[in-house]
Length: 248
Picture (tube, rainbow, N blue to C red):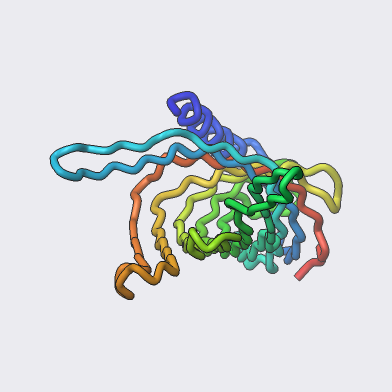
């Protein structure tokens, strides 16, 4: 993570540097932009709890790349704009079966397996402050502040009576700071790079298992958790298409 932190600081320095060398002429244009992002994430999950005098620690890493999201940036007033981003809804169904067969005696028995149905979606609101008040600059550094609502749900339906149906649901509400840079490719097209830095992550986990042997209160658990400066590194690339570029 030390290397990642160094690159993050380098990128922030680049934005400050660009703000001093870009074009000086101001513009009062109002711009409406359509954006497509490719998202990547490096995450170091860590879970620590103590039971009967023993401390249990679970850690590791998770890397994801390639999630596509769509965004619309509203018209700017001076140096300010608002951005609304949607990561397309994801739906997945998986099924596994374990059977024992013996053709000689016509024996066929299903011993295990399940059907898993998962959903995932994300919605982001972002407030952008452009360091330069010049829409025609080759380099447009800006700082974004955002909050994002993330939802995922996993439903597990066993195919045998020896296991029980369960559902796990997660809600995330991170607050992020996004140093960003637009690089002009043409009059209508910009390349965008930004590094979302999570300042705080609030998570609620809800799990329910339909086990009739358990009391009703023990069949479901809710776990709220807040993490300050979580060990997550995001890097995003995008293309910005200018839909409207007229003088105000």
